[in-house]
Length: 160
Image 1: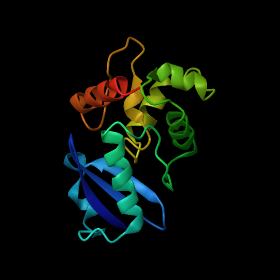
Image 2: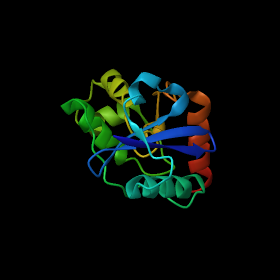
Image 3: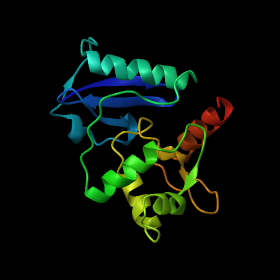
Image 4: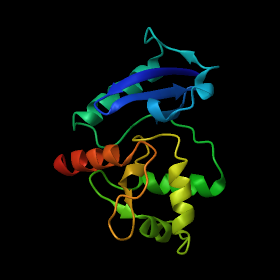
């Protein structure tokens, strides 16, 4: 697996590709170094797919991109796959509750399970798990931290 570091306004993101698909995008400060110890870093930015992913992230952070157009591959349970596909349907600048998403995917009583799948999303920002909040409107959890989640939601709200 090849990866690069993307310097976002909120800290570095690690982006990895394997077999011509983006498979990983996480905040570097929340990643266990042992995970990436066997990966090959693309320090010279020679990998075309990683370059495209970085360009699209730059466009996103500049408020010019609302939907990512990257080949992705998601590895997870069937339920996680359903939740992650549901997350991709949430429009830029909008939010849903865990319960709303559970209803949308046909699992009305699975709000907690949706939260758990959300927590294991391997493609932060690209699959917008930051657009999910608690039913009472509170931020809830976010692997990158609540401050980042709030920043992302505010950024999207201001660029609709």
